[in-house]
Every structure is written in structure tokens, then in C-alpha cells.
Amino acid sequence: MASEVIKLLDFRMFRTDTLVWYSLQLSNGRECWVVTRRYSEFLRCHVKLLELFHREQLPTFPPKEPFWQRVFGGEATRDNWMEERYARLFGYIVGLLDIEGVRYSDALLEFLNAPSHNNGQEPEPSGAETPVPSSAIAVIRSVRVRLTGEPGGLEVVIRADAPAPCAVRLALRPLEELGEEWGDASPSLEAS
Image 1 (cartoon, rainbow, N blue to C red):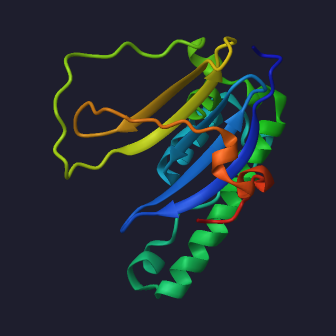
Image 2 (image 1 turned 180 degrees about the vertical axis):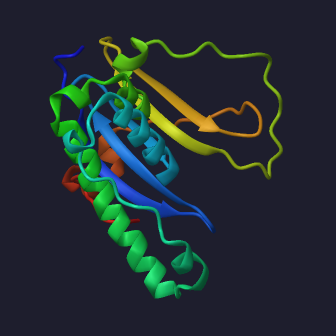
């Protein structure tokens, strides 16, 4: 698996009421998956990488938002900060994936939820399913899609943070039904 280079296909920022999330769409040539991370998770990964590599070997990591700005900054100032950090995190992750020694490190593979990190094995489900209240919210952490090799065969693995185990419904449609915009779609780095 070490010969398969992980590529960043798309990187997006999105917000909930109080939180900012970053979504990375990745591929190793055989599989495609999406991972959603917070800034603090990028920082934890960076700290792990600093234990393995010299600071000079790694791309510059974007700093935390200054406390005074978080407390006293206006909305426009904070929005500009978030956009700048988004751009810097994009440069950081692209830089990590360009460095061969870093690219295959366990710390980065774990952060990216790379298939090679867990040898393609998904964790075993734990316990019996508990119904989730309809008002509960689950945050999707990653989505992995793999062709099984059988005609029409597809495996989809979705990982989510939820207050209890939950069910996911997946609807697959032929590409014709998605319209022309699907065929013209290309990866984008615009915030959504």
C-alpha cells in the first residue's frame, strides 16, 4: 500500500452555529473517502508529526485564533481570519502529502482515516443498537466508498459521532438521473 499515493481531491470549510469543520476528500487510486476534521484535530496531528520529524521538515502550521480577536473581534474580522486559516490549512495538508516520509507516517494516515492505516478492516460494531431520538444530531466524520469488483458492487462505510448507534439510509441513482451538472462537476476549493 505504501506505493499508493494519497491525493487530496477537495478541501472545504463549513460552519455550524458555533463550530468550524474542514472536509477533506481523498483518494489513493483504489478508494475515495471523505474525512471531516476540526482545527484542534489538525493541531493534534501536527503535534504527533513533530514527535517524528523536525519542525523544518514540516510545512508551517497555521496558528490558533488570537484570544483577543475571539472575544473582541467583529464578525468581518473573524470571518477573514477563518478564511485565511482555511487557506493555510489547505496549504499545510497539501504540503504534508508532498513529503514522502510524512505521507506514509502512522500519525498522518490515522488523521486521514486512510484505508492502509487499518489494513482495510473496519472496527467491529459494538453492542446492540439503541434507538436515537429524532432530535439527535450525528456528525459524519468520514465516508469511504469502494468498488467491490462485482458488477454494480459498491461498499460504503460511514463513520459518525452520534449520541447512540444510528441507522443510515443510502439511495443510489444512475448518473443519468443526476442531470448534466454531475458530469460537469470538478473538485473545488470554495467554502460552502
